[in-house]
Length: 298
Image 1 (cartoon, rainbow, N blue to C red):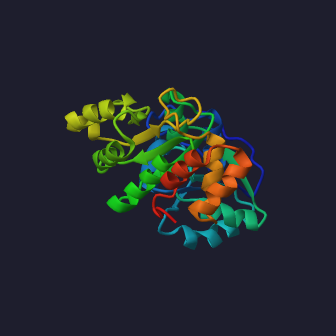
Image 2 (cartoon, rainbow, N blue to C red):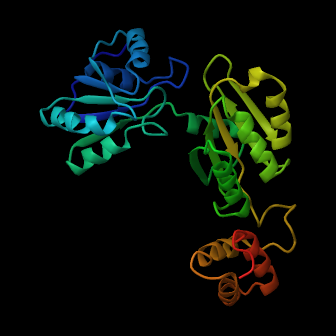
Image 3 (cartoon, rainbow, N blue to C red):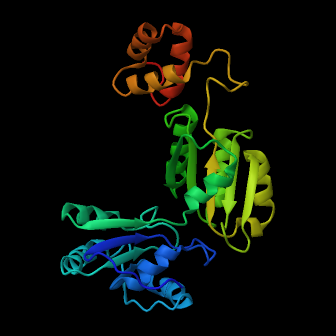
């Protein structure tokens, strides 16, 4: 284990911890955890196992979704007294679908120093092995638990409201089949997808292919439905897709319509888009109706 280091006083360190394999922690992270005065952990019992592995004895306090707001004043007082603190989540990089952003925001407002100690992240790990474009991606966290809300998000993706970027979701063992069923129904069998299950753990598995193929595999055996999942969906490209409808419009025109339709009727948006883009009115009108499917004809 790395030895303790001399730290600047009154600093909150946001420390990434392993997402599965306990060896996926940096020497710098271990040095910081060994040197701070207190560690704030999402689950002290879980973090205690990590600290025990590396013989780290710093005192811990809990900071999770239910007590984060109540902890803020205590944390500020400790930092203003010159203590160095670390924030860790149950696994991976704190604040990424984990508690902490309210605290960090408050620290910035009090001009207190916050320092990231980078490391493991399920989101980035999944993207690195997905084989799907990562030049533009959007992390959407967990899909809604309720059927209607989940389907609404997926319909927005299908209609282009979320753009042509790659989408990344987290999902649990309890809802993986429900989410994939909705994706299959709304996005279609040929949607390109990669699912990373139990990243860095003993039963790490990648499922790569079309939605139909991946769903068939995961639904065929309950063992494929266990663990933590990262879902990576390829984005839509209305320019380069060789199978695109010949009557479709360019990505730029589609993005323009999306913006115009937030303020204008379909008719008004199409009329203005024709003047700006020079594309045919019929094509723009057809695309606008698809994008504005909740309104239909104006």
